[in-house]
Length: 300
Image 1 (tube, rainbow, N blue to C red):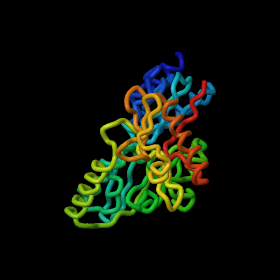
Image 2: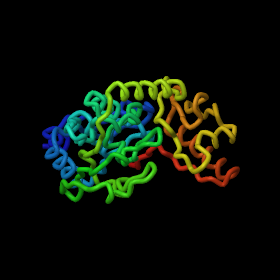
Image 3: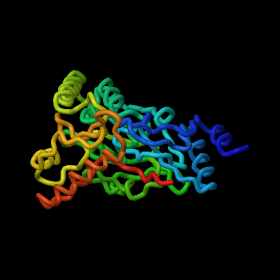
Image 4: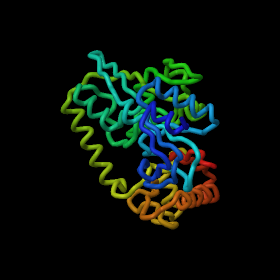
């Protein structure tokens, strides 16, 4: 039995899968395998099979904060979104959620249970696992502010790790230094609140997103982290780069911290704009612009 047939015993497997179909940027080359494990047991066996053949692999969420390089990759992309997506609300505000849960759907479920704390996540189009990896946030809140602990797979062991041991800060977590740790689920502390108030707050924030962000174009959300007192969008504006286009990638006219796929963009196009902003910000303001978008290692 060849490797592909073995992998298919443990999940849904697609070969030579275009990653442009799995990222909100609609950009990216092909992965040799795209795998959706059926369970934690299956996930562990899939990783074991790949490691035995020295095949590189990455775990992908909903691809909402990801810029996948162009070209073919001989590795495997493991996706947990379609089988690891259960959530459980307890009366005292405790929430257990699996890594594949979509953040907007999780926020809606919290609202239905009259639980407050996830309103900020209602407009973040990613998975919980990806959000925990990046410490996703908005409106001066982030996931680490309500997080208690994370269930992870590392060194072939499944264990709970407390928030305090995961080095959380602005758009950062220990997972970024330990890419072999796989997020499986998390435990949160929410607060009881009025359901109508939560609903109205989520609706107002969704309207604000629609008014200020280029949601009509494929993109990956904010391109750069805010480097300090001056927000990233203002730095880009002061550099006169709003509306600048290279190939099919464009710095949005609506929000200059968004680089959008204006049509047929490649990873190289987006990277050229990212490098332009970084170079000019360093030259003019002596500021290091750190990309918020994740760019995986993708080399043959």
